[in-house]
Length: 237
Image (cartoon, rainbow, N blue to C red; front, side, top):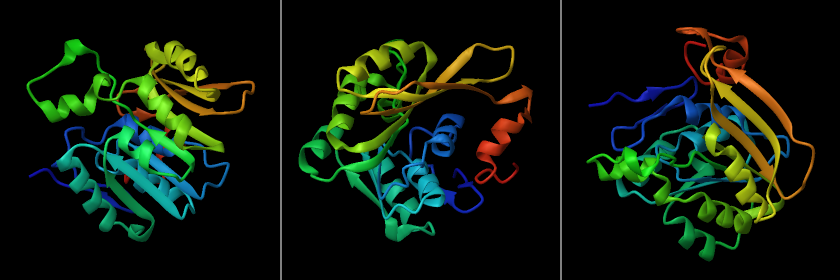
């Protein structure tokens, strides 16, 4: 049995989830902008519920909703929410993004998503892992369209994507009147190529603030910036 992943203020069971906790999710949960002091937050494709839990710890949001399509992941997310210190603020819906966007009248001040983004050629024999990892389960266009419906006029959408998808994603977002306000390029170490892009988008066009985050100087030697970002969560930071 896979042990729970322990953070400073909560634990996450992940034995029922195809996609385990990884650097991408923790980076996004720690980096997402809370400047607007959101009242209502939505996590699209919750998996273990890690993003909802991180934002519950970081914010005073009264409503933190999540949606998850996979049966096992949904049940695990509900369980992780119920066992957390913020159970009264966290709720997970078992639904597709389309169903949710059609049925829910509420708008969210902050939407967050760590979407599946592996191309067709990565398919494995494990269907639920594939569903969690593949863009065909949640194409970017479908994601952005739903976000444009669910996001409050002054709200922000926070997402992590592969760097090589950034240009396409931003172009696609503009069709739904969503524009990048902040971009963070993530590198494993100073010598490697940019691997991920963290994006904050909203309905207001502004000059985009771009920054770079380097995770390690060498193997297991973390940069000051990375430590500062994740120290409220990781036990050893």
